[in-house]
Length: 243
Image (tube, rainbow, N blue to C red):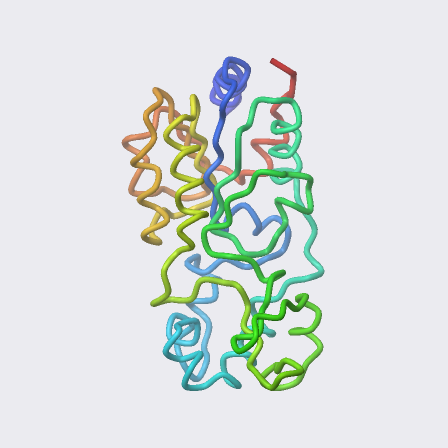
């Protein structure tokens, strides 16, 4: 492991346009549960499967049940950035990291100081009235009862991408452009099982792909460097220097 981390250090030191592509595993060290691990949300018992609850069809048909699950399991507002979030922000500040492309909706990258973050699946911190478009903070969703409603009477919906919904085209195009022009792609904390997000790494044109994940992924055999370890522990050992 020490040798692999030193290789990662050398590659980072030689790069000027790193892109980090991350998933739920980046935030588990902040206490936010993932979805697909043994203890993840998809293995817990509810009246409906989480995949169904987090679909647009379910949201439209049973908004009260959706919000009961959403407040209970999707709002982790006490979580704080961990070593991985902080190191990525430092690499951006130092001029080595171009952007973070994330599947997470928790906003922890921005809380750590990252500025260029492509949130593929949206964010719990942005919410809007479906009738008039008025924006609302996440605290409004947290503190309301039942289905949160705007002063105009419309339902306030989180700006998160539910199953059956399309990714935001502006975010998708920005993430693709950065990935295509990156000189090092670091993929971390993701099973690479969620599409279309996982397919974005196929657009990378550089020579080196690093994969950091506690368990094996379908992409391991195609990566140039694979570290099966908690991502925060790995990145915490990386030294940051300006180009």
